Length: 572
Ligand code: 16G
Ligand code: MG
Image 1 (tube, rainbow, N blue to C red):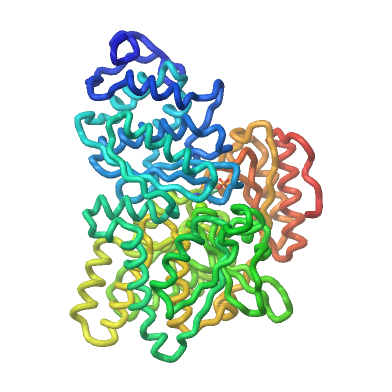
Image 2 (image 1 turned 45 degrees about the vertical axis):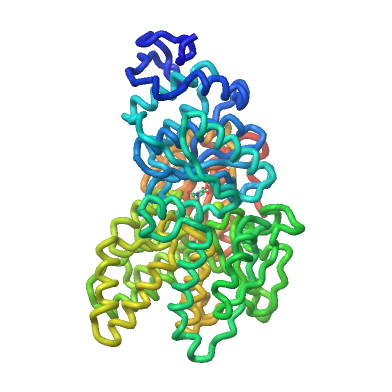
């Protein structure tokens, strides 16, 4: 048998979508496909299992993922050769239950994997064992991969019990294709994104070590807050629910770097509870209640990370014991108003834009546009969509309501700010210096709970704002999210950043009629990218009306889009 598993070159075959294809003409001697075949047997694909590289990579029960991990190791090598850069592989399933796992690739600038490679990833993950070598060759050909190039892959993983073994499978994939690798072990997702960018910018973005990450963020935080703490406001504490995930380990290591400016008290640190179980940012946002395992006193500032620490939400109990959630929308508002003030001070005409999704509370959009006079844009759900839109501004703020977001500064904006911080006169220089530190404090590769937390804490300290004052910027419209089970969620297709349904016919008209019945109302539906369900979102003038609207829209989805199982019920 030859190195290509005995297949003849140029022979008519089927590609991974089952269409006839010609075996491509790449120099296969640069991939030891025999070795791949042998190793792959040790990471065999379960028969008939089809998975999709979704919004945030592959995600399913951990026991079904071994072959996917091995193959993403292979793919990372090809992507690294093609881009002539270091590529990241993160093993995590974020806020999903502990039994799940997942994997995503990180592109050279620390961004999410390019869309065309998501297709390659899906192809490779679903190839039957005997077609694997051919699919690898096919991808190399289609993507014009120079197989003579060296490849380097960095790997990180969260704290799930399955993650260590699965990241070993990634390493098997990398090494069998001759790639070099560095295994960072336990990392938050945003830390891995940071490492990738540091390496590909030759250290310009920062030092590609955990220590380098702690130092870069902490020194920016300390510099930025010097002014506030000089006023004597030096005793700030924050309670952090770490979702029993990786955020707890990393924050415990890091907190000494930014204390005494801020002291954090960690809860759900993984010593007792289960990952993401009744805690974490996703739980708090979707249930609109505090996590278990945290002691909250009236008016105390608390926040929750999700399982891989790329999302954050804040909250507090008021004196009457009422719970108040401060989600991604309000975080974006706080950050944008602070940035806008600084930009006015430096007066340099740099553009500021805010990017949201359809899930953004209507009150937040109104406040940003009408009170703050900031342009707001809406994209489809998923970080990559928001991130790309935010790159169009000098300064682009993006946040999903669920608490995932960051701020991007264009190269030109960064240069301008650095120059002003050196040259201009006093007031201007002070504002420019603050912006300079803010640039360093944000993780510009992806939303990062630790970095966002430090930015928020710095702003609150500098502005002398309490959590209640922040919350009072605007009042959220009551909102409700529901899930509907349908036979095939792909029967629903949407347009206008997921705000309008195109198919099935009649559904949008039905939603429009229902929305008309209520005041200040809005509703939309979209197929989830991470679960086998359709999501329904509604908001209106009162919680009662919102719940009623959400129920009626769910029923319309059930009836017009092939609902299965129990019909949606009134009351929650
Ligand atoms: C993923 C996305 C998140 C999005 C969510 C939507 C990334 C890194 N994460 O977690 O941004 O809000 O999916 O899930 O892109 P859904 O499609 O099930 O509503
Ligand atoms: Mg996450």
